[in-house]
Image (cartoon, rainbow, N blue to C red; front, side, top):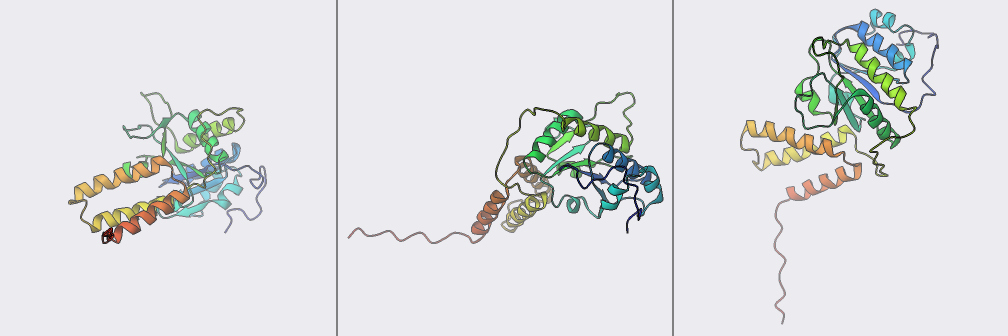
Length: 266
């Protein structure tokens, strides 16, 4: 049910150009979701996704703090898990105050916006991931990202409100879409694979490795599983490449073939 049956259309979203999805993971306060929606509509973002929010929905505080951004809230989607929210996403950028030594490219908000603009221009769906207010994203959640967005703040007072973080990144997106040049773009005509397709392929591969006893221990399985997932996600596979890799795994599962019979030469 819409949060506002007859929204005051201060700014509609139907005619906005393609833009990244904003994904709030386990948000704790409805007010922040509403304020994030307001910031999004200010700067041309319209796809809001909530993952396991810690408040009920519809939420009166979210509606009030959105200041009329009802288009965003009416289109917003709820998801039980982060992978579900990423089902159609090709490239994920996760925000964190501490990059934590992850083997992923790290961007400031401006560089991230330019990077996202280049990807969206190639027809890729980009997600911007924000963690809960008190704890931020977990290592497992960050492992799903293709890149990290680190917002430079005063190290003596690094606390940043969730909606403020969305506002900063959304502003840089709006600025980037008005830029005339993007560095480092790598256009490709191949249709990119979604997160769900890559996750399915990786799950297929891990299942077959488990079946042949490759991991040998639970600790080795956990460690190598994360490494394998990160390797494929960092690569940014095309849909055709995912299909090819799945076909290879299926063929390997069939086991060794009999050696061809050599001719006697007589």
